[in-house]
Image (cartoon, rainbow, N blue to C red; front, side, top):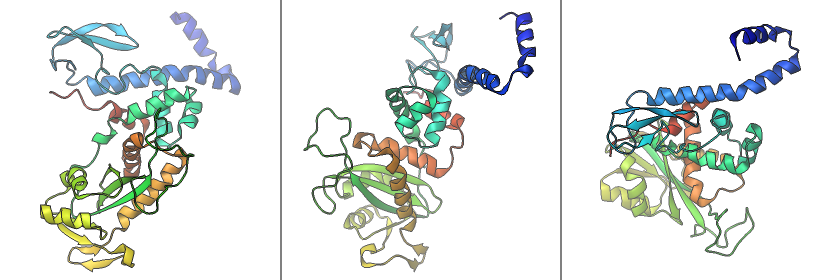
Length: 324
């Protein structure tokens, strides 16, 4: 639109009635969303941009495609854009991304999120796991002071699988065996008194010493006091690695006792379990293969660090391509 025509159109805006103004805002919203996404991508990649294929920092501009500036590497001669090598590469409808991330911040199920931004439910599902791909990297390096650890169990699910390794059951069914069995997914959660949290799906059935070494040991400060229930796997794990350990016999009714380091209990981690269970309910069953992504999603929300769609987007695209 030429400048005189735009000036005339812009001057007429105050004369619009309320429905007309809403129509104009709806029409401009996609363009505004696209502009904001492109600005965030530029901000996150302009400093230290390098080729994702060979890590060379020498490149030149090489046209545009799909609203993004493309570059050609001066070393390997391959082309790339600022999303190449990230989970968001080749995703379309960029103008709707921030609205979708707001839906994720509100923990909306797939269909509700898809309806709210007018995309297909399959698109919403695909976006969910692409945006969550790098959230797992946003976790504390160490748990310090007093760290509580405990497991929770949910019924394993093969929802969406073409072939099952067991007899099919109705969604929301129950395990065929009582107690902790191979029909349940084990979720290990450890949390210190500073509310730093790490979590992992350790497999099916009861947690073992080897699984604790894999999923818990790398995150424990050498001077940490590990507080758990009376599970023997924790005692063996702590003894093998020289970790200070206190066990609370929850099954015998013990809830809290005072020790040299202060209150000894597992109430913080158990409260986290309760919030996690309640948060998972609206999703009506999570497939076991996607469960780690949901744990990352919940940890991100529980920490309260993500307060806007912009922050979540920066986390989703991750840091500048790391060197090999």
